[in-house]
Image 1: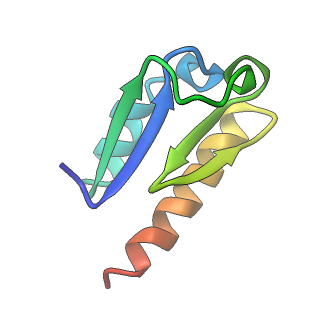
Image 2 (image 1 turned 180 degrees about the vertical axis):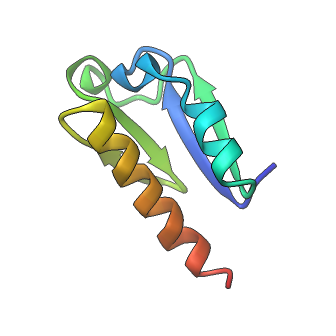
Image 3 (image 1 turned 90 degrees about the horizontal axis):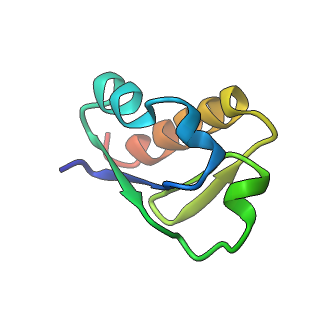
Length: 81
């Protein structure tokens, strides 16, 4: 299990890609957890999003969201260096 937790809703548009494999391969310190619902009703159907260590990250496109998730991961990891 990692020191950075990325939570994704299985109904989110971010599920168009294998975010778990992508992030956990690039960042060994990251654990991606897929949930049935993250209680942001309707947000998952409107835009790609994830929760990174309790902080909501969202964007208009999947690619932009992945970039923002990676930026947030980098910020979180910087606290441990």
